[in-house]
Length: 374
Image (cartoon, rainbow, N blue to C red; front, side):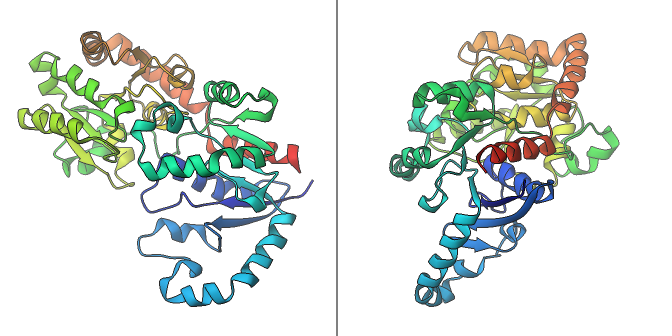
């Protein structure tokens, strides 16, 4: 059976979010799967000939170029005509929650329901976008994909849908996340004044549901000798409503037990993972939780919240904690840093769990969903 697909790529940008990474991995792999005859790329009303250009700073597709707006307006009728023809002959996949009207009957991926569960963690414009377009996109969709079984069940209950309309397709860590010897990571870590096994890591947007505040309070409670040996490195976007978190982080930085690295270049991130003594992810709500899987694939012991899909996704390999119990959280962190038996076991189990996921599997299972609708 021959498939013709339109893949929306509005999440592609130089600094990839989790949804951007998902979109990029599909964009690379779906065209290579047997039976996929043609893939077109679509972004905010424009056809994108080469999606990889969206990952490069300063690169713009033709219709996004401001000097050509007059041409875009003049030829709008022709563009709409071409879009309408292609949309009718292709199955549309919106990997970032939304389907345009012309993509009716296609597939959307709903990564989580944080906009509805934790609206205070999202900017007003995002809330307005979901208010206007999410329910309409759900009605248009022929099928829905989620990243985990936990989210699949949550979404079915939220929408009042039969589970048969929703399929869970897990994400994966890229092969660049793998165990590396100390000598392989030391030069890159030196640029951050770090040494292999000399720090703990949290890769996360700094926002309330990620529970970074609780992590900082728990780290502050560690015995001074422990937090001095393993200062906490936090990397990721500053998120929304994060001023209070940054104030606490600044205090910890002055005392030497935490540092906020901001965005780390993509080529350095796998090395930062592989050199860490521990990875901590205290978020209480996720659709999948890609960073813990990347850490497990890197051969690093992992601590995650006992919440949302994180127990499912980490498959028994991670230590589970309750971030709101700061004293208990701190005790578990100390154990995770000092208990060598648990650490060895966590590394072995984590590599096995992470190895069960792959982007190739994700792409093939996604195409299997397309085939149900074609």
